[in-house]
Amino acid sequence: MLIWFVVVYLLVSIAIGLYAATRVHNAKDFAVAGRSLPLPVVTATVFATWFGAEAVFGVSATFVKDGLRGVVADPFGASLCLIIAGVFYGTRLYRLNVLTLGDFFRMRYNRTVEVLTTVCIVASYLGWVSAQIKALGLVFNVVTAGAIPTQAGMILGALIVLTYTSFGGMLSVAILDFVQMGVVMGGMLYIGYLVSGMTGGVEVVVSQAAAAGKLDFFPAGGAAEWLTFLGAWITMMLGSVPQQDVFQRVTSARSAKIAIGASVLGGSLYFCFTFVPMFIAYSATLIAPEQFNALIETDSQLVLPTLVLEHTPVFAQAIFFGAVLSAIMSCSSATLLAPSVAFSENIVRGFFPDAGDHAFLRMMRVTLVCFTAIVLGFALNSEASIFKMVENAYKVTLAGAFVPLFFGAYWRRATTQGALAAILGGLSSWLLIEALIAEPLVPPQLIGLGVSLVGMIAGSLLPQKVGRPTPGIEAHAAIHHRAAAQTHHADPLHQHHRRPTGE
Image (cartoon, rainbow, N blue to C red; front, top):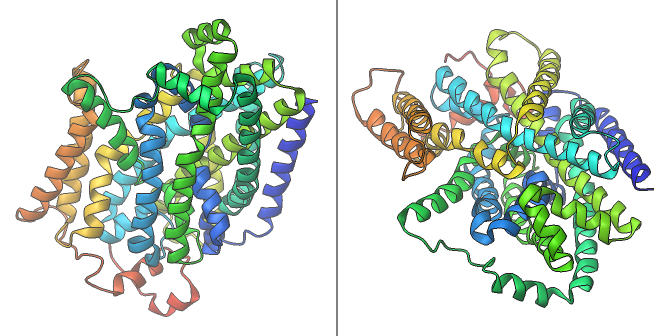
């Protein structure tokens, strides 16, 4: 029964993707769902940004081992990221009518900055999407009792997600996110209810976790432990702000007001709901201590699925794995789409400046297939845990993309020279410390962030030898129209502003 439920669920997902494909007529529909989504759908898709393999398997497993201080990056940093990014994009970038963050970097600085930041953004997705693919393989292996090996499950999962994403784009992602959010929340709450009955109630689980020190949040050690703690928090909270999937989800809203409201609601829902799989996973150590404590030492990611398979009825198993598949697929589809759109728009399109909208749409779909193949190869050959793959993903964007994005939006004096100094200085310092120092006192990505900050300020204030000075985005209303004109998918209202512009 369980296997057939999973099969039916996957077929329904593909069918929704194919239906969405009938509504995709141009690049804007594919990339940002035509900027037409209402508040409930945008809230669901913002929630689904993070609620995937990381939240279900990674966070829960890490909590069981290390407690709350072990999950400071996610959900604490991740949920704040969604709120910060949503407010930021809704107030500053939404009205620019651009498809990607790279479009903003080109408009605000130049083509070189656009390419460098896009490479950083695309590279950061390698670990993140690989974690989702790895989790799909794990689920298929578990629900088939080993009949489908984990690696074969990864390949199967990647092909399914690729199918409906390549046809329907952001519209299929948004529709599935809305449906899957209901499945996820209902399924997880139901499993939580069953598990609480086995342990004697929520209060018993919470009190046991507190007694074991699992609810201690702040570090108990010295400066080194605090710096590691803050490094993990800041990396997820700020490093994931310059992310294309977050940007796409927020800017797919039909208005800036909806974009901001949905990001706050989605981020808050994510923070609260991530505690459900944490509760379920820790309950396992009370239901069968010997079995699950041994599993924690070997592979803690199996605690949750093993508990459900061995200690709940078949119906509950179907509900749980349906919820898990919903979470992982909704997360992986958008995180496959985002870097593909960014790479197509900001890298590939530069080599084909005269390509029309339909040609560009094909370009995005081909890029999506290629990126999926690369991610699958990385997932098949990586030994890192799901949590670590996600946690490490945003170091590159923290060091190389956050400062140019933030200062480009809020500091009028930010220049191309400053942006280049921020990118190159932040990335090089981070990479050098990662390569040369085994256990640095300060996390390398924080040093990269600091160097990037200094590079931006110094590079912008010193005499301009590289690039050209550029105005703050609030200084000239014409920038809005320039952004719309340069991205070939502007609203009809902006078409009369189309004119040649130089880089």
